[in-house]
Length: 119
Image 1 (tube, rainbow, N blue to C red):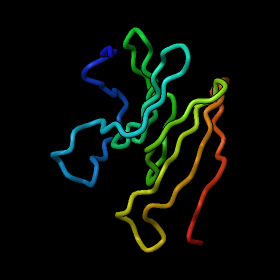
Image 2: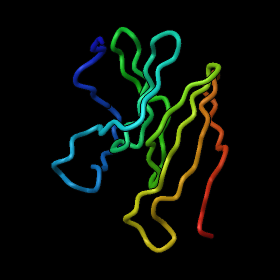
Image 3: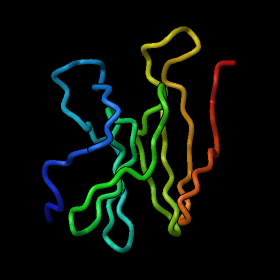
Image 4: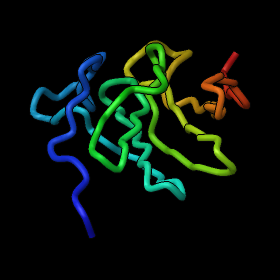
């Protein structure tokens, strides 16, 4: 096991602490995946960002989830990155733990593949 970067700092964090508790640390990493080149993709839930962590430790945001969406899961396949996102559960009756899946292609293009809504 190797530490690539510690601590992880997100310069463009859209701060939204997990469960709205000030004691929860940023960026509150949940899901992660690693590609064949050793690049780590991490769901920075509390920052509404997908992070790309290069083998040299460089951290950059490669996908932004607009509120109320936050990434929680990541998978890598054939050069594309798939991100599972959920809405927060603190909104009105039309919000709360609704999922969507987005794809970040090799070209940087983001495509929404599936969204579940109550409407």
